[in-house]
Length: 330
Image (cartoon, rainbow, N blue to C red; front, side):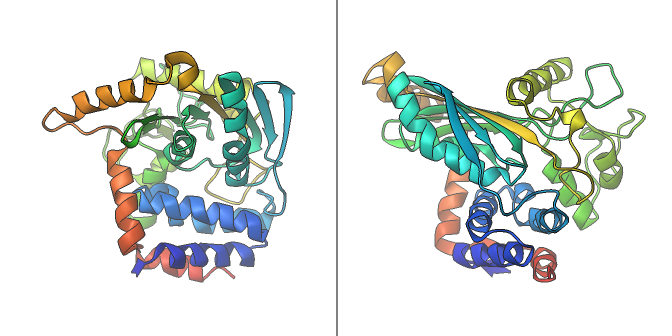
């Protein structure tokens, strides 16, 4: 079914309100999920609503709390998400970190007791829209083993980066350390579809095409041993230095069982004019132009940005089963 972005927002807000989520938080979560759909990232979109709602009802995520921020150092913003949804905490970082970064040249936000961070490329782009380069790191419940091991210790642990350029959309990189985001396997399970045999392993370390088995097994890291090392690095940056749960301490994001996931995110915002001078964005545009000049090459972020513009004008296509599942939330 084709929905306008406003209609999709209302659909999600309604389900969350029925699940006991505060109106401000419901609007924040809905904006993030609808924006994910608009950018072509359905695994982080409306398919998440039933799990979010169930967790809010069970108290696994607190839909009523508001995040709290303190500044223990001039360039540091420490945000306690209070075991609520991540998106209100990310909104707080987007609102307060830029002023600190512009004053100090660089600033860091650490977020703890948090939840699913969604499409992080959309978050870092909000900093780029304010003239800042931004990097973001997040952990997720354990699904990747150390290279050579059979026990998952790290999450899919995404990394995102965005930087503004003169006369164009930001350059935006957003990737999971796993070969694919776990949300794609969740979507395949919901649709009853098989997955490629290089996406995930069963609990014995064997490749699997069964999405159900993959959800209880392990994800394949991007780039083998190098990917596993990167997953460890992101685990440290997002959880080890923030006070959040490590991936192996966190409960699942896909059901309402267990305690709050209490995950972590770290955002680093940089005022590039402090390091590269007033002409830095023109220099960055030069790099973008050189990339764009090559046939068959696309600047990272352009696909999602184009899809988002189209969705703004034409709406988004949401599968009937997803709408039915959201409508069924009482």
